[in-house]
Amino acid sequence: MSTLPHSQIAIPEAGETEADDRHAALSYLNDAWVEAVRDGLDEDCLVQAALFAALRSLVATYGEEPCAAFVERLAGKVRAGEYTLVGRAH
Picture 1 (cartoon, rainbow, N blue to C red):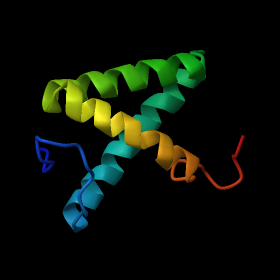
Picture 2 (cartoon, rainbow, N blue to C red):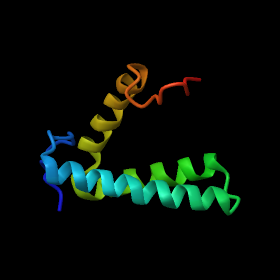
Picture 3 (cartoon, rainbow, N blue to C red):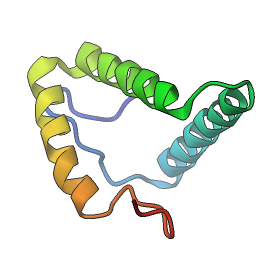
C-alpha cells in the first residue's frame, strides 16, 4: 500500500519497514532484470519497458499532471548523480 500523497509524487522518508519493503521490491526487480538479460533480452528494451510500466502505474495512481511534474524533476536528479552507480558514469 502506498503512503504517498495523491496530489504529488514524492518519496517520503522511509521508516524501517518501508525501507525493507523498498529493498525487497528492488531485489525482485533486479532478479527479474538479470534473468531477462540472461534470456537474451537487450537491456535498452528492458529500460524502455520498465519506464513505460512505471510511468503507466504512476499516471494511474496520481494522474497526468503530478506524474509529469515528477518526471520533470528527474532530470535534475539524474544530473546531480542520484542514479549514478559508483564507477559506472558514462
